[in-house]
Length: 359
Image (spheres, rainbow, N blue to C red):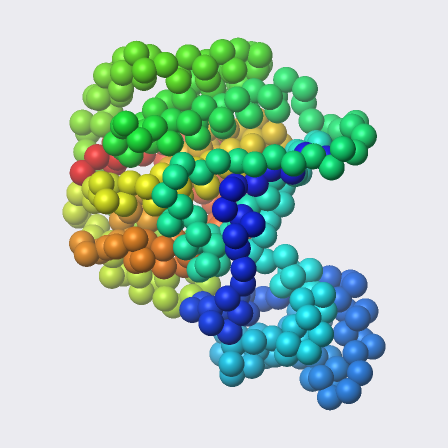
């Protein structure tokens, strides 16, 4: 098995009680069968406390909540299970968070969810272009169900998209326009069953002259100066986990105002967020061949985060906004599916996104 992750992942260390937004609140913690078995035999007063905190509904067992927090959360921000027995006593959800792993045949890709404030800080404060590191456990190759033509095509498209995202010679808006156009042309090849031509197209998009010509062709779309209101409506009608997110939407969204600009001083954090989104979601198209809706959703995320900053927004403010946004949007399967459906059905289009790239 090959393991792929960003170069900053191994620097992560949980802040525990010092975390400004503990992961023990705002969502339900579903327990796995192994954890349930361990807690059933946990001795003493703590064991009684843990079992009293467990609730089974609709075939799932979770910890109860109080005031939005897991009832086990102590006043010092620590989990009594981890404090008494170490991380090994946690359920699978709590033990792995904020780590998420996606397996594509013989490759496992690890990301740190930006919903974690410390993971978001490491991501946004990474000054050098993010790089991917690979390790291999040397195990035998096991047959898998990956499409032998589709997977390398999508991998080539994602690699090219990340390189476009990290081209610091171009403004962020230009990079996004090129990434959307690449995804549109790749999607056309995928729809026509010409997967083998995707790597050729991806290489072509990395040429400066090809990019310059493409940006000229995109100029008419970008001159339309679309409004952000449709994106705001999507955000406003999503499932909301916290009142904080609703307040941030109400405070930040100016329905009749033109889009905000990508500030030059935040170009690197924006770049890192875009690379994070592309890495985490683009290859999921192996399941349904729908690359364009996923890339469009990645651009949507970045545009929303741009709009959620006020006029005095700083890197620290962007980090806080990204963490809350990730908790609300990335961790909700309902919200993720809503976005994909809107782009698949062309309720929102890639052309519309291009029209709101520029201030």
